[in-house]
Length: 124
Image 1 (cartoon, rainbow, N blue to C red):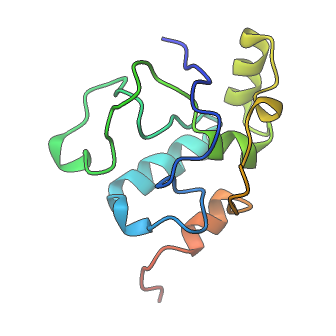
Image 2: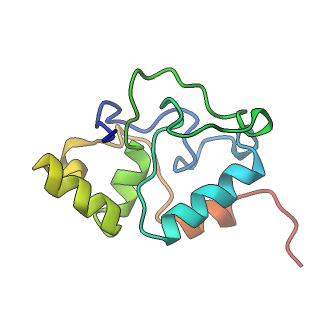
């Protein structure tokens, strides 16, 4: 199922927001998102219904309140079509998702590495 662009502003708990609580997310979710982003994939909104089964212990941040999978607006705004997955999505949808989304005055991290650096984890 092709993701929609139904969510056009970053969610209050989205990891791309500088004011979001990173403790909302299970650490495994950050690992999963990192792998997906590094492989050129797209990031779905955490409110999207799961595309594949997710173990119960990983469901903490996944609310599934949207009717269909939707692109993460924070990802779209920060990625700016760098991801091959987002470029393919834009070609198939015949639209520029970056122009369709808005940060709505919210300060976002400038990269996924910035998101990861903001996590409250001990570094050795």
